[in-house]
Image (cartoon, rainbow, N blue to C red):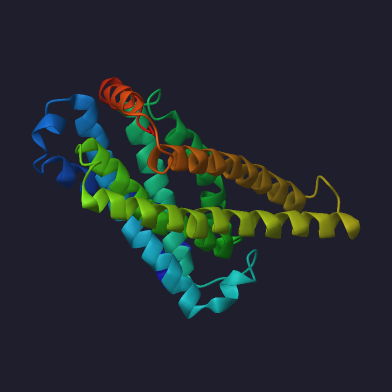
Length: 265
């Protein structure tokens, strides 16, 4: 496919497609209490775009592995045209979402999302342009399976539906997929890269060799995201599964209504 020889064009097309999607979703009606608050309205739109991205890429990543099972073991050099398209698509989305957060002046409230994008966008772009670690990028997108339920949770909270049956069902599925698809995928990739770097050093590879430097930088990114994920897991369990007093819950709910922070318990 000739288009795949131009990853920059694919990334640009993805950026423009998600930008168009954002414009379309911004025209859809919102819950009244969300529409009255500019920050909440932006959060709702941003989460809606993220939800579409998660549904698309999470399913796509699983299909890539189903079609090419060797992706699970040949993480550094595994390749398929479908995997390359997926990585380019996600790269464009990360750039769009980063720009959206900054230009909408939500950097302070959404700094965790912004930090995540800064950490993962460079490895994805590296994979898109070099075809190296495409398989690793696909495996890392298993997290998007969990993101579907994570975004659903945040949308329900924005819609003040924390007491609904849907929220109670979703919170259980969210925790299960968080452990299996988000934490599991990240630890799998981290373990692979750590073992690879150790083997390289035992074989006498130079620390400043280009391959070693790239591997080390990706490992730093993975380890940082691992720490963030463990913190998110603790906060998720604390918020949804640990019983708290009614007074604390009331105070916590009021703080959510008044908070400008995007990611809250």
